[in-house]
Amino acid sequence: MQKNQGQGAIGDGTRAEGVQSFFLKKGTLRPPCIWRAEGIYMWDHLGNKYIDASSGPVAVNIGHGNKNVIKAMNEQAEKVSFAFPLLFESEANITFSEQLTKLTGPEYNRAMIMSSGSEVIETCMKFARIHAIRSGESDRHIFISRNPSFHGCTLGAQSLIGDVFMRDPYAPIMMSYPQISTPMMYRVPDNMTAEQHSDNCAQELEDEIIKQGPEKVLAFFMEPICGLSGGAAYAPDSYYKKIRQICTKYGILLVCDEVLTGSGRTGKYLASQHWPELNPDIIALSKGLGSGYFPISAMLTSQDMAEVVADTGGFPHAQTFTGSPLACATGNAVIREIIDNDLVGNSDRMGVILRKELRKLQETCPIIGDVRGKGLLIGLEIVADQSTKKMLPNEINSPTAVAEIGIKHGLMLYPRRTGGGKYGEWLIIAPPLIITEEEVMDLVDKIAVTLKEFTTGLIEQNII
Ligand SMILES: Cc1ncc(COP(=O)(O)O)c(C=O)c1O
Image (cartoon, rainbow, N blue to C red; front, side):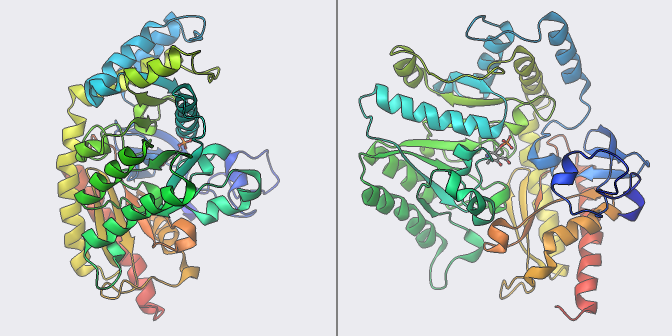
């Protein structure tokens, strides 16, 4: 880390400070200053090379420095970079919606384009509400979501998240909605099968609907496979079937937050496609949609649902960048890369290899508790003891400690402990979907040396 602090420490008084100054204590060394990025690699201003093992915050699905996307963005910017959709139609916007349908299926042929993941979650909340009003069900206004979960940082989206650490400070200034347990399958309660545990979690949804009053509940929000907050955890098939049945039984909209899991990340274009019976009513996409080249997000729904709203006064909801031609042209170019290079298939194939190699590593590395996920969304859970699943002492903050060691070994890792570690501690391993088998091996080698150094330190300090 020392080597990368070329611009000094935060708050040394020598200059104005940017984003880092809101996150890091005064005097903390800065993270590497990134100068260039290409494919799965990034270089800092001193020439050190890193593997981007998490695609940033699981966003850069097609990898860095893609020339086709940059060219398409330039061409669009020269033609028309801005046209407001309430006043003008834009070709990029129409093409984007058509392209997206090729991957999501015709049942999601209406796309509302926004900029960020948080904004699109807010859009889903508001669309669900306006749809209920226009369908004659204006009593419906309660959202139910899961814990742990993450849905964004704006106040509406934040009111859905299951993470006390991120949510509690803002609780007095936002709405409070009920939550049910996310099935975290690494820690199934004793004397229960995986199916029984996840069935109980799904049953919590029905119980909560009855408690709130079925006529008042509007929508259920879930990440089909957990993202950062649940470390790529997912449930047995029966869970998804039961969730759909409960939503249908009570006329509640099922919203899948695929901001992180969409765009090919899990080996299908949508993670919900792993469970066709889930059949969400509304889907939120972002991150990989623009792959970090430009902010873009999309709320997808059916023609029927969109028409209910459009034909009864329209959707009173838009922002300056809604349907931005530049965002849509970027999204179009990203989708072309995904289709032309079969990145969804590559995510599936490389994910299988990467999980197999990490599980091999688990046999010799005592602190790898679990390796889970689908496609190239992998959670690597860190524990003090594989057999008891006991966590390392809280004050070590092990995911962050491992990530700091990773930097020395040319590895950018994303550390996470939701709710201050209440559900476990993990690293998100989610490299760009363009990764090759050779690069997978390079990634595994770097993870191995990083974990070895961390484990050796724990042994030397008699912690494990
Ligand atoms: C599942 C999920 N939903 C929503 C969001 C919010 O997206 P954004 O950071 O673009 O606002 C995130 C961000 O990490 C996410 O992981």
